Each structure stands twice: as C-alpha cells, then as structure tokens.
Image 1 (cartoon, rainbow, N blue to C red):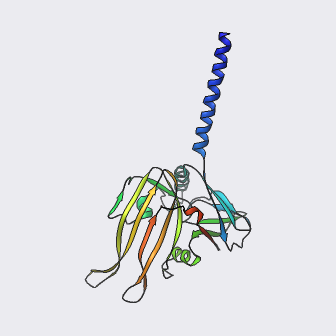
Image 2 (cartoon, one colour; image 1 turned 90 degrees about the vertical axis):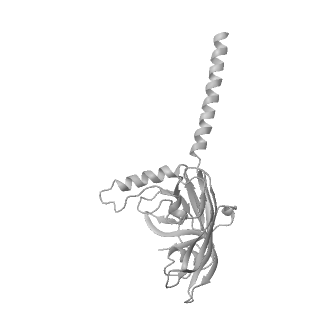
Length: 254
C-alpha cells in the first residue's frame, strides 16, 4: 500500500513537472504574429523575408493573391540575427563586418535624450522597415507598412523626393527593457558664419519591452528654407498606441 501511494505520488509529480516544463518551453518559443492586407497587391502568392541586408533570407511569412499577409516574427530574434551575422562574417569575401545594432543605430541623434538602458541591443525585422517578397526563390518586390505610398517612396530615397507628412512603422526586437524620452534638434539651414537659422525638432516617446515592439516614426510638420526647398521641421518616434489595427501595407514590385 505504501509502495503504491509513493508510486502514484511520483507519477503525479512528474506529470505536473512535465506540464509546467511544457508551458515554459511553449512560452519561450512563442512568436509574434503580424497580420494585415496589402493595398492594391497585384502579385501571386509569395514568401516574405524577415532578414536584413547582406545575410541569407529567412522566410517566416507569406502574402496571398488577395493581398492578405501574415508574418511570424520569431522569439529571441537577436540570436537569430547574430547567427546570420556570424555566418556572413565567416565568408572569405565578406565586404562588411556585421554586428548587433544598438539604440543609436535606429534613434540617432541621441543628444539631450534620457535613455533608461543605453546598453540594450536591438534587432530590426526586414530590410530597412519593409519585407521582401519571393516567388520560387526569386525576389519579386517589397511590402512596406505606412501612411501612404508617397510617404514610403520619400523615405526609401529621401535624396530624390521632397518630404511629405506621414508615418511608417517598424518592428524592433529588444533584448531588454529600455526607454528613450525627450527631444533634440538638427540644423536644416545655417548662415555663412555657421549660425543655425532653422532646425528640425525630433521628439522621442519610446518604451521598448524585452521582445517585439511596434515603433512608429512620423513626419509631423514641414517648412521651407531660404531657397524655398521643403524641409522636415518636426518629427517623432513613439510607441504609444495600438498601431497594429491601423497599419496599411503597400507593395512595390521590382
């Protein structure tokens, strides 16, 4: 009787332990799912690459012929990115030394800002802030989340397009909690003596939790310089808001 009770108790403990272990592993392995509809998508079913420049593609999403997309962003994406960087760096003909990015690589300039954890390492999903589409192993285009096709076009190549008001979104994976708060300015026009005549103000209200975060960048106000050229006078990075329900996607075929 005693032996039976001990055996039954041991089985119960093992079942509870394995159940808790399974829940912990499932929580650790849980991914971040992004869904949406691509406006005016005119392609076929395509895979979506979530990796950035120079490294091999990693297909973790798709868009169908109706423009419905789903992207699965893996947990611990910083480790996924670092492995891809290491693989690239090991190549004999590697043109660059790739490494993890920090806060300054995305949110610069950092002057006059309050950063709760400046050592946080982050990883950006996609190339720039969009995702490449592939069909049968061939790259066919890119999809971008933003307020308009014109705003995305400007941000892809600001040297060739005049600025307009609007916003885009990016998905950042942070290895720890951090926040970036405050504002700073950068000159848009100086006189012959180097004195600043006009400057662009950028506000930061960003709170990153460990894991995936949706960050919104917006151009809020435009102005002209002394020659009449449009300049961005006020912009902002923030994470306050349920952006996932308001994101529009646009397709740019190659």
